[in-house]
Image (cartoon, rainbow, N blue to C red; front, side, top):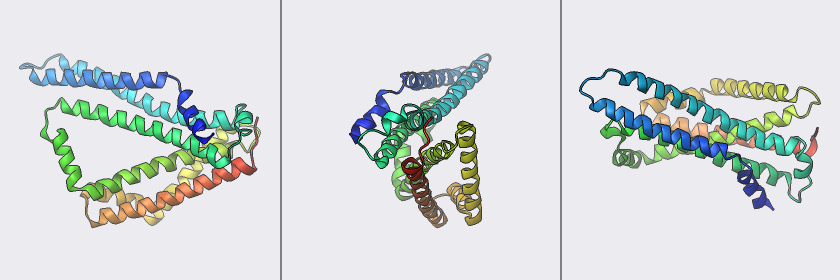
Length: 255
C-alpha cells in the first residue's frame, strides 16, 4: 500500500508540469543557438535585442518552474491530507509515517527533477560560449579533484531540500489547526519558522560560514562549515517531521 501511495504522487500530477520542463529545455537550446550565432557574427547589431528578449522569457519560465514546483508540493500535501480528500487518505490502511513519507518522496523527486532541468538549461546555454571551463571533461575533472567537497555540497543541498519540504508540511499542519484563515495562518507559520531558523543560523554563524567558505574554495573551513550545516539540516528534518507527524496523528482538523 505504501508504494501505491508513492505511485499516486506521480500518477495524478498534471502533464502541464512536463510541458513546462520541455518548454524550458527547448528555449535554452534556442538561446544557445542564438548566442553561438551572435558570437560568429562579424558585425553585431540587432542580435542583442533578440537575446535579451529570449533571456527575459527564459527567466520568466524558470521563475514559473520554481513557483510551480512549490505549488505542487503544497497542493499534493494539503489537498490530499487536510482537505476533503483527507477523509479518504486517513482511512487507508497505512500509518501516518507512510503518508508523510510517501508525500515527501514524491515532492523530493519532483524538486530534484526541477533542479536537474535548471542545471541542464544553464549548461546548454553556457556550452554556446565555447568556453573550455564548461566542457563536460573539464567539469568531471573538477569534480574528481574535489570529490569530497563536492559530495558534501551535494549532500547539504539534498538535506536542505528535504528540510524545506518538511518545513512546508509543518506550516500547513499548523495552519489546519484553526477553523478559519487556514492558508494565511499556514503562511504566517512558515514565515515564523524561517525567522527562527534564520536567528539560529545567525547565532551559530553556520550559514554565513558555509557560503563564505564555499567562495573561498574547498579548504578546511569549508569542510567544517559543511559538516556543521549537514548536522543542522538533520536536526531540522527531525523537528519538522516529528512536528508534522504529531499534528497529523493527534490534531487533525479536517474541513
